[in-house]
Image 1 (tube, rainbow, N blue to C red):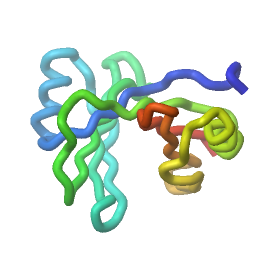
Image 2 (cartoon, rainbow, N blue to C red; image 1 turned 60 degrees about the vertical axis):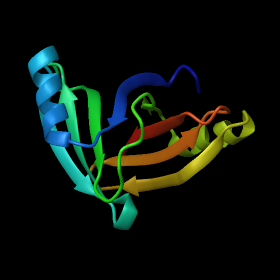
Image 3 (cartoon, rainbow, N blue to C red; image 1 turned 135 degrees about the vertical axis):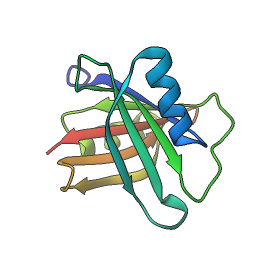
Length: 130
């Protein structure tokens, strides 16, 4: 399983999505390739998917929770592309981690995702292409 996993992106929670996207574009030359919105209630969000200018691979995702303030800067969501989200969720629990939100399919995006925490509580987003 470890051979299938690879680090793919970093996601940070922001208060001002427009200002942050402009900052990363201006300062580091990242380009917003996609803007995604979804969720409901306190889970509603808007997300900017930033990529290097010469790539379509996401490198930084900026997440604005629409009905909650962003936490104090310093924590990130680590994103990993995996071959089988369900298998990695089971392995997370076996290794002392926990599941924040179990596997779910997002057919409109061609993905299956889950959110897990490592033993210290750092959040990981697992992404499987369908």
